[in-house]
Length: 157
Image 1 (cartoon, rainbow, N blue to C red):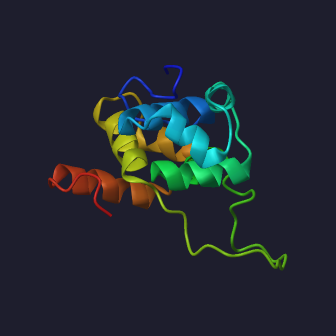
Image 2 (cartoon, rainbow, N blue to C red):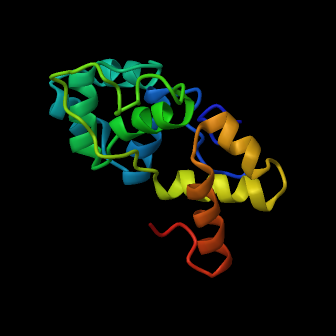
């Protein structure tokens, strides 16, 4: 895995998140002038540059970055929870404990996660059973993804 969380296959694997690096990468992709970014945040250019060095970003700033760079940076954390939280842990929506927190219908896997998992299977790096055990993705879901890939519909939900 490189410093920006990309695995050997080139897919982002959401394990060791460095949000500042990801924001910097997106800002460079869009070629947005540093002075425009600083003005948007009402900060100096050096304060904006310092954010690129931060592993985590305040949620208020992250929301602003998401709007400015037209990218849902929060989804990176959601994908981390989907892939690395205990299967019986915090994402269990069938818990008998009642909560006033919003409930989400189901886990939503991004195209990148689906493609990454398919790549692991197709290259022989991991078996379907190993992926199911490590990431908690249901075996039937993984089989459906692999079948779609083999029929030429890679990454489509």
